[in-house]
Image (cartoon, rainbow, N blue to C red; front, side, top):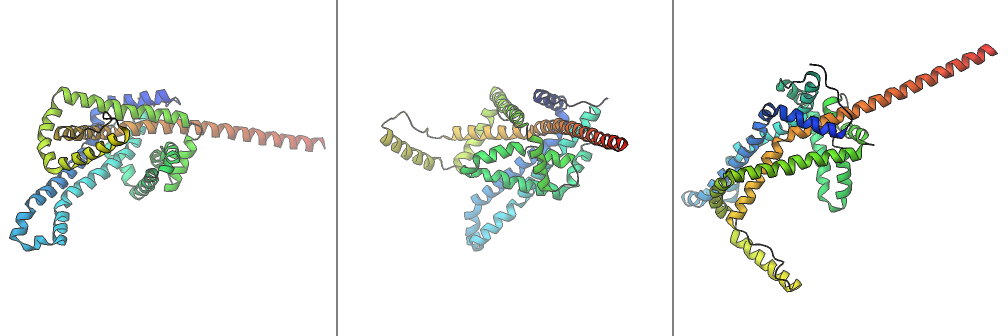
Length: 339
């Protein structure tokens, strides 16, 4: 199949990314099974094993005085949760790798019209694991600055400028992790608004529309109701609902005393509400995680488009330079001939 030409049009970028993702949904989703479900399984193991240990701790302490020691209890919890933590860490690493590997997958699709040989695409990341880890560390430090209220605006702005750092990692060689940020900034410069529009539209799709759609589907098929019945009894044991409601009631009294308005109050929580909230968060996590490749494909296409514009501009400037030098040479030759 002939090579697909990337267009420098943000609408085309979005539609092309959705088409590539949807037409290869099953194959791409298979890459995400362990990275996503492995994280869920790892966390479930951690909390379930820790919960079982906590439930039986009084009995263990009665039989063995060593379990009355805080260091012994902490060491036991650490040892018990290691399997779950290892599964979670492995799955999370694979999750990060997928985001980088999808750049190579997109490149392969543009050249062949097919998606195949994922291990080879994955190797483009794992063979440069140290640089990839360094990039994630720098990126995490940058994002973490967003917790400081005074930095919200600058972090949000630079978040847009740095959105292509992982594409730069995949497509450009022999540069440092810091250069990934400067190259992304250079590519986005002059294309800020269009980048924000792409980010907004894809974000609406993956974080709102798809999440709400699957939430409605779960409600319609009564999966939410089934899961709720399973979680409610666990939530009663794990969440101090009565204590939280006492705090909410105190806050409501303060609000009434200050505003003299009884209609402005916080609702008390119930096991059903907590369960529904938890299930919605799980659905949101699964949907957003499984659509990670869609976001990676989108930014890979946008990188390709902006890189093509950069190359054309560079070639145009080179031609101007050549013509200018040629003109100067001819002028010097003409003056020498006249002399």
